[in-house]
Image (cartoon, rainbow, N blue to C red; front, top):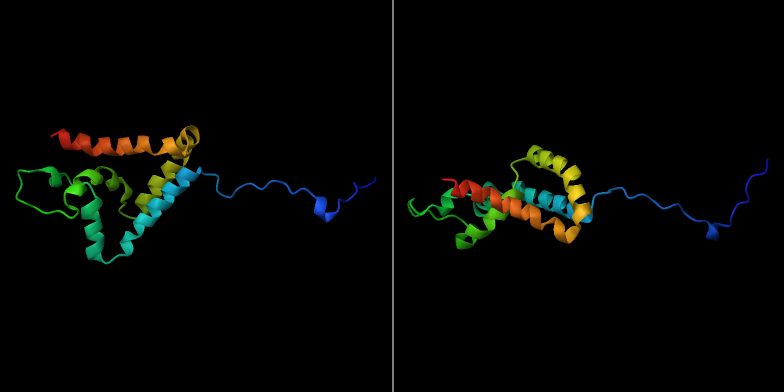
Length: 137
């Protein structure tokens, strides 16, 4: 049996390579964002506590009947904490478990909707959660 003739090196066609990470780009960016934000645990305790107070959702911040308590972030924090609380995680197991569930379900959403339509629905869900606990009282 004869073997097929060898092609010269400059005319060989390389087989397409499979990417190592097959996650949609929007989901990859979101997971990296969560990881970078979690690096706050490397800050000194005073700064880490400040970031949690400034970016975490604290219902007491909206209660006008309490004594005048000043929270970090001022009036702007009353707006952004409805979304930013969801980016803070307590420890690596917390962020790992959330990412573990985000990979299969977030991938399906990101592939179906694309990057521009991937972020608004989760942002609405994140906003509705603290709103429901705040106005349920």
